[in-house]
Length: 431
Image (cartoon, rainbow, N blue to C red):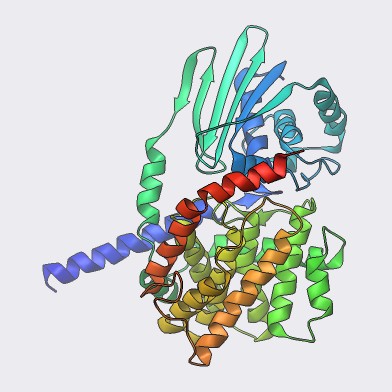
């Protein structure tokens, strides 16, 4: 074995560990929509810092956080919505140990205090201007004490803590290192990792994603949540496998947006995306009697493709994240059924060509419908491939390869839709 071959083997080993590390850091448990839960987490950190409920909290929040807290019910709060109840619920819990599953510790007996704090108007919400798309800053005061807490870039990423003018914690470089890792994501490497890597280290995280997200899908079908989009699709499915996958996935979003207390496993900071990358694959696996290894490897690819699609866009934007996740899930289905890199690449390219441009106007009941649209486009993209009818480079924003097409969509979402994002927020908050 020469030095070049040895260097390549070492690089592949390192890349496999990086991909495993990425998945382990991404596949975390959240209860409720992650934007209000991030606010709750910040509220809990305020209590941990001050050791008491403050008299006043000034909240400075990015527009993308604000638009994602308006339309979703916060679990266990008796159907409350909005930034203020989210912050206060976390403040009452007073502990960040469960991170985005923080509301698991919110009890029925806490409702009276929550209602009192809302009535006392101790929280003031301000739009944080000229900042990142994911940004939360709380300045809390109790008599002569002041605490400042900042979360940015990731929903559970505390970057700054201060008490009475003394900096307790400050972190900036970790974000740069994470971005360097995510830049190593590309379709061929993801495919090889999903096909060949030993899954033992990440298997518990994948299985938890399957179990949690399929459980909330069944709950969404069983009971009434949101606009019941999943139930409607299922009732008109005519025993179609594709329609059943769309129905169960949409139903999971129905339940989650409707305040269901069941936890989910997220991807790219989003429960809806974590649901969308996983539930369709579970449905296909069950209906077609695929073995567990095939499902786990398909899910590995689905999750990592979703992260590659989002690496240039960011966690929050004007581009609907369900589209990225739906296309990723369809590539996972293509992997399970075909196992070829060509099938996966064309599924992604075709799906993105059909569905790119759907806007994110906040987390709400209609997210379930957008998930259904994303899966429809992605699975149609795979069906196009099987029929030797693909969308080629030069057709709109489609480029010469899968990776460059993803970069093209990322540019559209991050740069091209920046003004769109501001206009969406303006429309949503105008009286």
